[in-house]
Length: 238
Ligand code: FPP
Image (cartoon, rainbow, N blue to C red; front, side):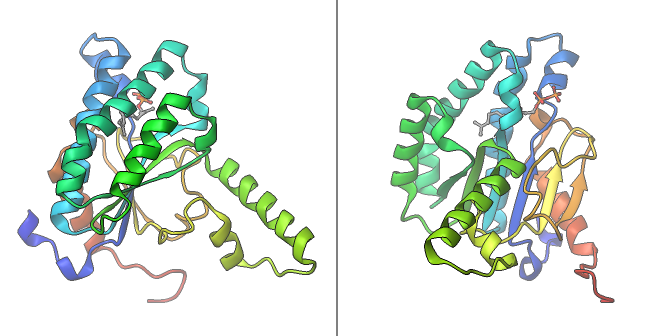
């Protein structure tokens, strides 16, 4: 499948809504947390596939602002898994020259998580390969509200100021990332779930019935192949 992909026409930025961990566990009569653990292994598959293909940016929806509403034990486990992931994958990230980034209200995460994140960000700062961004305590509407507050503050300071699309994009957490070209969602749901609403304005959507823990490299290759068959028009006539 890899051979069928045109390396000249890769999506520059792929974003993924990793959904279905709970259903995966339920199907196996296991507690939900097993699904999240299996989901962590699938993260490695997604990252590896992008690395092998030569995709420049991958953004993963790992924890949404709405996820705080889940039972405290599940939230705690998700935080633990994240810390485990950072520890386990650091060597691999260095070997594969992966640059880690985060988006979201990071300051609201538990101190231990923030500390591990800061450490991982610092260690991968000079890496020049795949930009892997984890969306943590992320919500698109919160991001827009934060951006508008920032712009309002600048306006107060500088007096008159034009707020155009560029100014908004520059004020988002994703200011250093290009807009996603391809947005993948697993487990069949046809929703954006408050993920990159502004940035995904022209993204191609690709939804698979596969539950996130079952996601493998070939699924990502299939998404890219399908993406390459589509014609992107950005509202024009093509
Ligand atoms: C959605 O499944 C997934 C999440 C809420 C969290 C995503 C977390 C991981 C993939 C594991 C850890 C990630 C990293 C980066 C270390 P769900 O629980 O909503 O599934 P359901 O809709 O079937 O209940």
